[in-house]
View 1 (spheres, rainbow, N blue to C red):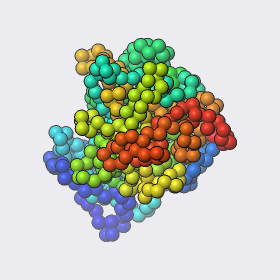
View 2: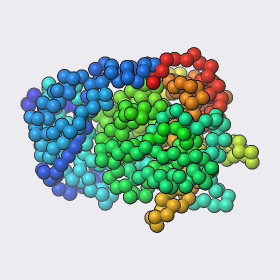
View 3: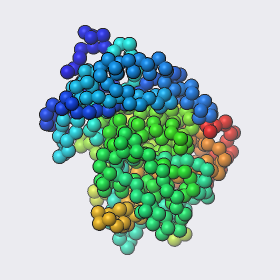
View 4: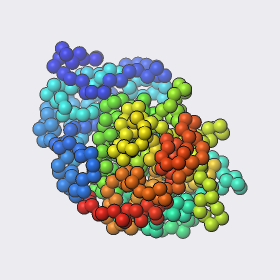
Length: 514
């Protein structure tokens, strides 16, 4: 049902073209009556600034909401094609439309079919997405037409042994000299693409650590997880929430659980940026090779992260667990997305060994590929430019990561997870997905100590003095070798939290988002 825009008065949404997956087989044409919901994203009334604005949250949202005329235009378009408008959020600049597959194909001029890959069946599409010329520029992306999984959890487990029992979050906080703080008065969010949050397990884990417990708020986005019983995503959820719960127990904490689709991922981030919880920091432990995302999706993610950056919300994203190839077996180097987005803080992985007093004895690049235990992602983006904070680095594109932390599962974290038996058991967990919530918790402590939002933390990471980091100079990730200063394996290294706080306290204060 591909529509030729030149002959129908329609335009193609830039970057929405999608080819069939060579690893997937068409099972059959989509059922014309299958119900589908999509998210239409709209342009802001004013362009999102490139820099931190220091505006209040309400002022920022008022200036950069969707235009009333664009909302009205999409409402008219939906009615013309038999689609229902189920929701409008002017602040998030989104409209939720629903209808049958037949109506969606007609409305957006694209072909839908059911595909099968690796034993899973999903709805996919080929071709570009087109819209009426009257909406050209108003609609920036449409997600939800296809429902394939694009991202994976960056979490790896290992078997605990007497010589590698693993650390608790408190152990690593001590090694990285995180400043004191419980997160009181601050807000932190976690993006989840599946599984479920088990507060009973969370409470038991924190009790064992001697840390006070307060439950996470749970926000289900787009219906929540597709398969909430999946052990892998549930393990990821518990790693993220236990890390943050252990380090900032008195912060307001929220986990946003969405289906593992581009639509779910984007809608979860957008919700976390603009809902009533007013998050100061957001942790993302999911992603995939840049090549798996369409330019339309990349642009939508980048705009959301640019928005977070302008609002002073620190977003931390795991850089991947498959080394410098990001798991693509073509002999080339690849970078993980969304960690390669210019406006967020990308987190790589190290192998941490502590001394008897809890300080760092040795820290090297995490690379256990020879033992099939993963390696930190990192490299130079082929699709995203380097941010202003990296302007002085001699690289051609966005360099990943910015910082790093303990991620080697053989020196990983002891975490409590739900087991199939219904009981909970300890796992030794690593992966760069452990680093994102670790540093989201650090950002929360930093803001608590500062008494005001950090502002542009990415810029601060590159302007802070060398002693605010534990520079990692040993090891490689299969494509990039650690060296003094920034490198594409561990960024500037692991953070010395107290010294970074000292640097931040010495900067002139900027009026900030409230």
